[in-house]
Image 1 (cartoon, rainbow, N blue to C red):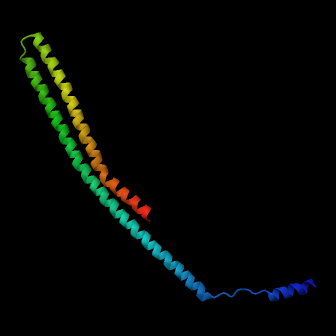
Image 2 (image 1 turned 45 degrees about the horizontal axis):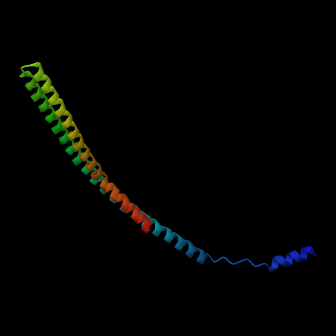
Image 3 (image 1 turned 30 degrees about the horizontal axis):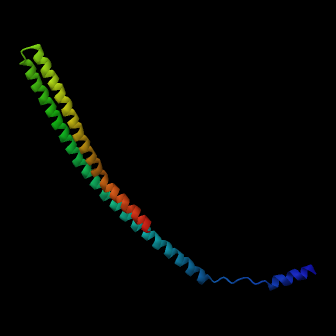
Length: 152
């Protein structure tokens, strides 16, 4: 009895028919969707890379300009310090007494400290502006990229 029941059950089971044309259409649609998504991703990647390249070029140009400015400022400070040193040396050579030498030396050191503090402030201002100018293009590109990611 059990064999007959099993045979009847097997005969009554229906298997779904497989339609190859529907499967092909579904696979084609899936593949086309994948290709479209890949094209979109590539376009976004290409645009991002181009924007990054422009930002880097701008940053390097700014860095070049800023480094030239800092170099010129450094040279000017060195020249001023050297001239002050030579002037002081000439004044010391022309001194008539020890008290005059001490007075000249004290005045020179006071002036030198003041000049050094002033030069340090100038360098700090220029360096701060330089850092801001150099980082601005990259910062702008990064903010734009983050904005685009949030929009997507």
